[in-house]
Image 1: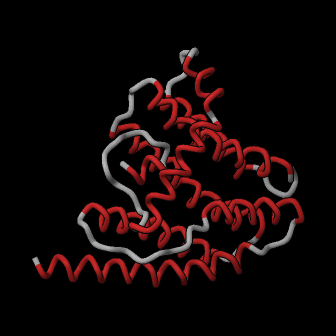
Image 2: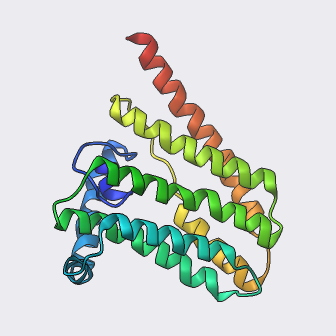
Length: 213
């Protein structure tokens, strides 16, 4: 899956992604560079009993740790969230290195990746007093948008270019925790509106193709 190769840890070789045609080749080139960068780590991990799925679950544990501590332990988010992202970048290459890529592993990658979009906004509500409605809308429509884009690519529906703000959100959250200030509400409100619009556009494109069949 190209989407899963580039965005969800490269756990399978079947074609499924949320990149448009213009972006896909660039993303695959980036994935190749990333794999070469992590090569020494992957070879070291390959010599251990650690499995790609275990890395995925370790990443989820880092995510939960990064969200559990608030402004009373301001360094925690800045340490654990990058480690969560690192595990997300290692499990797929390790699976490919061992030739154990599978649809099941890809599913775990997807779940682990989207959990960050759910838990970080929730943590912002709890620790920073961010607006609950903005956080809920962002998490809901980001995940819904990713879902329909994957379906669109699987069914051959052309999708427009779009912004991916997941990692930017993690950075904003870490800064807000460090400085004990809520900019997350504004960030989440703006991009929840953006993903509502993009979700509607892709659903409309899918609907039109299905009606035309």
